[in-house]
Length: 536
Image (cartoon, rainbow, N blue to C red; front, side, top):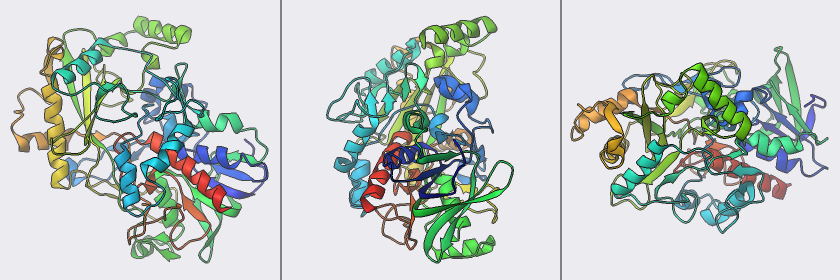
């Protein structure tokens, strides 16, 4: 991981889910020189590699940008936390490990929006190429790729009871939500191998980091893209000591900083909404109004139920229990430390007239006020429900001309009637499932929201949601792909109006996918690598 050399054929900004893929695939050609810049450090924190370690890494400034939103009117004026990975692997080193692709219709919709080559039939082979699924290969899955996908190594009775209760409530069991159809209830698959996290860095970077034509520079905080007229020629970054360096790109620069950092870098480089750039002291090189706009995220309502039998809250309490859990993980790579962020899941329709599910459940055999702050001191489990395709659109705005100044995050949650109705419907579906056997036998109290909140009171339920929901950490869409006035990149991920510059990460999604965003972002990295090689 040396800093030797300050020129390359390709410069990749951000070693997250897409950036790691690009570094691997592009450097496979020994005639090509690749430099990968990462603002964070190496992924040496041991908690990164233990699945349950997200409790220790989220909100930890050594590996997390620790962003917070501006106060949001849709959340009754609350500001909420938006963790993002600042480390090799990016958010794939901090996330909940859940492997979800979304719906085929998501990608067909991208193609219908004018993005040729992004329909489901075109992207499915890329998902399969990336994947090493322990269940084996079939028409939907691959078993030869670098990204290991495994079944859960832990089961808990409360989650099994939730799956059974959801079926009693009329929702079908689905053994593979990444298969023929997404709808139904079942258990998550996760990006892990032998009980350890399989981040994008583990999957894509580790096997190739000794390639002589690949230079990985950590603690490289990119300040801006260097432009010669309307052509991108290099990248300026600041190292850990504060010194400025420049990397020159002979062919292309790819921004893979994610939904916050990629638009921020574009704007700091003079590419973005002209008046906004001028207001922040940035000289306008190319007026591109869509940069930082079209922001979408999945907003989760977390319902907590107290139980009359022990849950993970009890298992993790006390030094003796913690030692027992640690020993089980060390010896067998199983037990609570091998657990992803959630065990059970469900993809459902909030209304019967919908073509595909529009809400998703994440069910956890524990409860906590905040991931990273420890479990509650009583027996309980959590049902998290989120809207999959929100209509609300937020934005990323600069807060000044300095890359060290965090941008303003304005999510604009729950700003449309559909979003409000969907979050209320999701909460009510969760409460309905809780009233079905065998879950009813295990619940002692409806804790959050309290049982005193009437299900039929729409306004009160919506107000509870505005005061209690949180991000499930899937920001997307801020450098949208397309051809219209709000588009930032074209269907080949080239920034409109600038040559030699592309964006490849979840910010290019014109509409957010119906599920967790890590697997789709890895697919975007695979597709971007193909495009760069074709165009070279």
